[in-house]
Amino acid sequence: MLLLAGGFGLLALPALTVALGRRLPASEWARLCQLALACGATVAEAALVLYALPTVLRAGGVPALAAMCQRAVGGFLPGGSPAGWAAATAAASVAALGAYGGARARRDCRAVRAEPWLGEHQLFEDYDLVVLPTERVIAVSVAGQPDQILISHGLVEALAPAELDMVVRHEAAHLERGHQRWLRLAAALDHGFAFFWPLRRSTAVLRAALEHVADDGAAGDAPEKRRLLRSALLGVTAMSVGHDLAAFSAADTVVARLDALERARPHPSAALRSLLYLPGAAIASTVLVAVAAWGGEARMLIAMAGRCPL
Image (cartoon, rainbow, N blue to C red; front, top):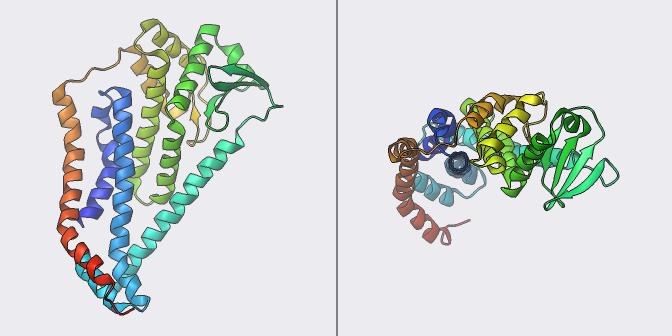
């Protein structure tokens, strides 16, 4: 039960602590969100598999090994075989739907790549900058070979050159920091753990944090650059794009980013950091205690598995 509760607690942590997280530097807050979501998903899935294992092994005709698994896992959830099959179904669904969500995010990324014949291609630092022939306002970064930054003719017409440069640098910051893989993780978790409603809030918090990181990567601490980036954000209409892509003015992040760009980057106190890190440390400690308590029986299971009649 501790493993399962700890896993879902980590998945909900970004949503529960977002008010404090916004007072951290964006890069630090994004790393905390990434760590909580990745570890939470791993622990929750492992807990479901462990609980389902005795039931699945018993049904597979290896009762001795199933009995040892039952002893190692312990009765941390009631319900017997029905609960074991429910856990097996949940574990398989999370894995299958998560894989589907990740694959769909990759497919969406490939779908928006600009072919060499489409638009005007030029080199911006190490990236393929493509100006698309459309009046829609578009600014999207697409990881791949090569990495691309897609902007539209409509965006070029809407912004001053200095503002446009900040938008392009924002998209370059997404690519430089590898944000696409974390967006794929968020998409996979949204599908795999769709039944756990706080998770969608946590992945939205992660996406917003990545936008703040890209803003800081483009503008840094320079007040003039931050003003230009804020002006560019105000000057374009929020775009309707999928969550699986890093887009400059996604509607659900605009207001918070405008507020952040108006102020200097935060420099939190040690007390604030302690307050923010405490819930995560408590949940992680709970998980470690559960793993340690289970470890002795698990070692015996591994040692005896070779002697079980199969």
